[in-house]
Structure formats: structure tokens, C-alpha cells
Image 1 (cartoon, rainbow, N blue to C red):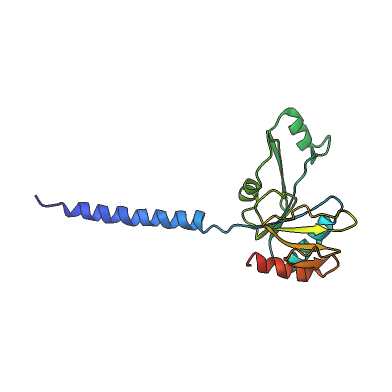
Image 2: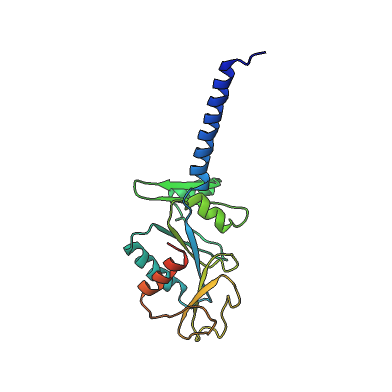
Length: 197
């Protein structure tokens, strides 16, 4: 029995369509640019926020699109009592979005803490770099801010993800050390090199 030549054409078209779908999937999901994430850790009042502000300014001067995330162990209040968004929350909305031409804010109630990876992949996937303050238990590159007047021990000593220390005294861990007063440009050069940007 002879095979119908039309079947060969249909098979070829299905194969081409299958390859087309695979290419789309690959480009959208596999090759999707992902933000590079780095954490700044340290004890309270060590200077983490001050360092983050310096790094953000320097990275923006270099043209990077970046986000910051601050991890908190306490309840946070982001809304203003009496505003429309606050009234929506008080009425029971699980999420409130405030959007304008130049900014958007999302307030979302959660039953538990979001994973850092979920925050980045859901809300920050278009960023080049995400600088995180905290999340010291995460398996991401970390720079610790260490000042001897605050503590005699590092928070992340022994953590294989600790890539550098910034502080007033080198703890001699065999990893790069920057003095707290070093220029932000030197620290950013190191970060970009470590993240391979």
C-alpha cells in the first residue's frame, strides 16, 4: 500500500511547528534574562543601609537597572491611614495596587514569608541587579559589613557564599576586604567582576 504524500507534508509541518514552539519556549524561559542577586549582611547598626545607598548610586551612574530588597523580621506598614489604598486593605482586599504614569506599588497580604527567589522572579525579573539587605541564610553571594565597635565576630563567618568583607578592620578570612571608607566605585568593580557582568 502506498503512503499518502499529503501525510508527509502534514508530518513536516508538525515538525516545523514543534521546532517553532521549542524555540519560543527556549527564548522566553531558558534564555530569559535573570536579575543577578547579591546580599549585603551584617549586624544591626553596622552600616548596611549606608553601604547599599552608596552602591545603588554608583550602579545607577553606570547605567544598570536595579532593585533593592530589605528583609525585615518585624511587621511593616507601607500604607497611610485614611488613603484609598488603606481603605481597600481595611475592607479586606488581599492585595492593593496603586499605579500611576511613573510608579506602581503593590501591597499584598501573605500567610507566610515570600521566598526571595519568588520575589525576584515575580516582580523584578527585568532588573539587571538586585541588592538585598539581609537574607543571610540564602545561598547567594554575600558581602558582610563588619565594624569592630558593633561586634567582634562576623555574622556569616564560614559561609561559603561570603565573597568579601567591608569594614574597619580586616578579619583575615582569605577573601577580599574593603575599608568602609573605600570608594564605592572600587566595591562596585569587585561586585561586577564577581557577578561576571
